[in-house]
Image 1 (cartoon, rainbow, N blue to C red):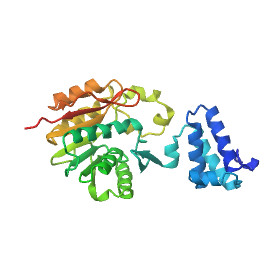
Image 2: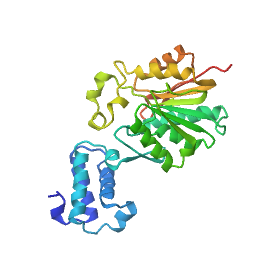
Image 3: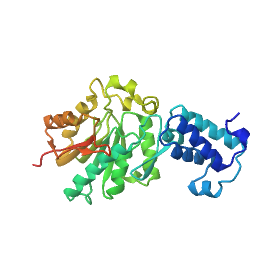
Image 4: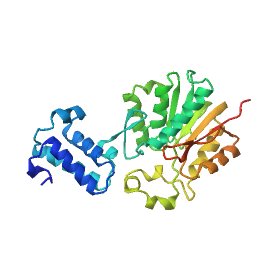
Length: 295
């Protein structure tokens, strides 16, 4: 029997009860998680929960909510349970082959747009590549801001590409996005104005120590950066350098303490650093960028 079913609780009391359970289990965002899970179980948005606050749940509804609650209490992220996550204000579907997009990754979008703005390139017909696109988060965010750009999304996982394709379709961006199954830039040709990537950068030995929400639910292939966390950068930076137009930009997300090493890899591949890495909200250098020298 559901932990909720025997009480005949209202929408409001069951939300409060779930929030208390989550808080007692150590979940920092217990109130928000409870609201999202109740909404998902009952098919209600925030307005519906307010107007229907005193409605008594049916047993089926209580059982359905309990199933979601148990998944959250076991460490599954709410975004995985709901199957959707907002990034850059865009709702993105997830799958088992994609990372849950995180606010830190928005620094890549911010840095890319900042550099393009400085170049006076925002309105141009840009060619953009997103290497290891996953859900398509970075590329679709950029296309939403750059109306004349066309994007090329690569991923070694066909399941991830299917997810990204679905997101592009639902956001009305399919006509400006091409999907290519390959390892980073290995299947790309031609010249690009901007290449972006959030590659795997966790050192292999550190994965076991990650939070359960990450280590047990994000795909390992999207996390594991090899012994020093830099394997992906060694591959994609050298590939990207030869695909950029003169003056073209490469912007990548990096892990804590990796910015100097990634800048060195860019320099070794002939790219010039474009200033200090952009930091995330925690002050960690997160978005590293380099430019192919103009002719």
